[in-house]
Image (cartoon, rainbow, N blue to C red):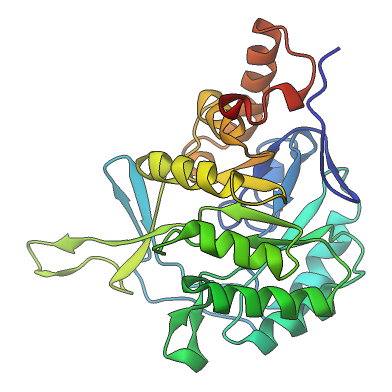
Length: 304
């Protein structure tokens, strides 16, 4: 018998390690028309803020060689709309939903965590700490261990839900960030978020994105993401969710072998909406080929 289940956190058991990443699948209404979300281990909704946001000026997205630049700017309807309109739908799903939250202040994060606590359909929080910290001169909370720990502590104090902290790669020391949020009470970490990048139109002699810079995702960042997951997984005791450029089952297996307990698929699903399902099947086939019966035989295999 092949067992792909993973007890990621207490009260959060996944049928397989493949998670739909935040930002690429909306709130589940769009992908549900393209594939059965029940086939996935979990689903992370689009980044949600305390109040509605209109996002950044156009253009917001640009394809690059082997990747994608995006500067959406967290366009979303706000947490109350999500609770009222989407959570009741999620409550009927067999797949757990993680709500990705982002804030401009520590108080924003705490308030959202409090409002989402005990909402039916919400299984856990993914805390995005790669957002502008307006109170500190538009720095990212996740750029320093102190900032990351402060947000983590505030969220943990405001909710009984499992808290997963999503780390930024735009840092000089991913291990310090991972250990800081672990010490602050995070139940798990996910990494990496996008890398900061930009593009210039040489005919117009202007930046292409309306926000000038954006986040780089896709296959181009996979080697960087894999190295950071390897380092983080070796430095913390809490579960690690790996992501960044995962397009195929082979990519996903690399992250699992590096020590990730689960993986997130994002940009690949924009190119091929069936990518998450195909990755689940590919992991199954690999395990059968190598006569593995449990996912634990795959997780951290390259570290043993």
